[in-house]
Amino acid sequence: MTAGSVVLIRIVGLQIPAMLMVFLTTSYSILIFHALTYRDIGSVYRKILSSSKMVYFQLNIALLVGWAGTFLIPIYFTPSALLVSSMSISSLGGSLSSYLKTRRRSDLVECCLLAANLVLFYILYANQYHGWKYVSFVASTAVVGVALYASLRLFGYFHDNGFTASQISAIRFWALWVISLSMVISQGEFAVLTPKAMLYTAALGLVSMVLPLYFLQRSIGSLGSDKTGILVGFTPIVAIILERLVHDETTIFDAVPAILLPVIILSFLVYGRVKMVRHGIEPAQDPALPRSFVGVLDDERHERDRMLGDVSGDVEDAAVQGTLSHAKDVAPYHD
Figure: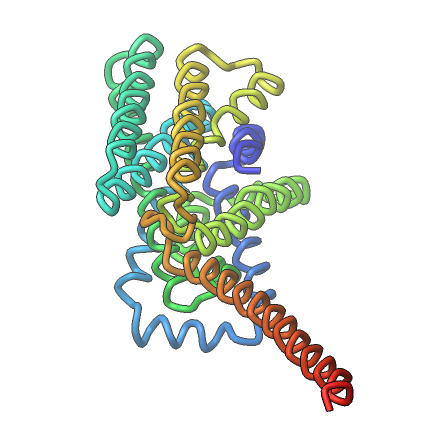
């Protein structure tokens, strides 16, 4: 959905003003998630304002920068360029964070390869853009990539503090909504608002902000922000395929890094799994996994051990009962 959404952003963004598109799409997202959490949304805001104001402010700024770029870069450059750069940065950030926790050499090698792939991406694009356009391309994609990765980490913070995926999704876009609304009003873009624009942005909001971000939040809750950050690297290759089918604009500058990115990630996932199986390491012993996921694995293991214990206890009781019954049957003959 993320891959398809950036292609759809380009289609919609070429038909209606960019800020109007951002405002309408953000409005749909806020309305949907507030409707899903209407029973406890008041307590959510009170909890944030009482204990997490600074982190909430950071999240809104990160999303403001990240999503403004997500809507604008596909229009002024290409959708695949946005995804290859931002997802490469997220994968690199997740891999680096994982290495700092585990100090495994394989994580360090993965970091180096992901960094090299990102550098290759920018080197290739030096042949596509020149001068200030290239500088603006590098700066905008890098800033957006860092902002999106920062927001991913902040999502993890809120999840660890007891917020659900729907609650986090409901509270995240207010800064983007306020800025886009003020720009729409100042530029008079409501004058070009049509039912067609509202329909397009409703579809765009569903496939770009509602469903992908909800599932992203669920992934962070299950795997943690590091693993999720790494795995988003599989997204760009899908965007390359869709962009090729829809716009026929894909170039080697996007394709090569987009192909290498999932190859690197998949190689180290397979390597890590094989190594764990070879050494008899359980997934719960992986220090890169979040405590919440490890807790789930521990609970499952304890439940399994309890059930096995109950079964073995039942078997033992049955054996004792059988022995006593046999003794009663044999006793008369001994007398």
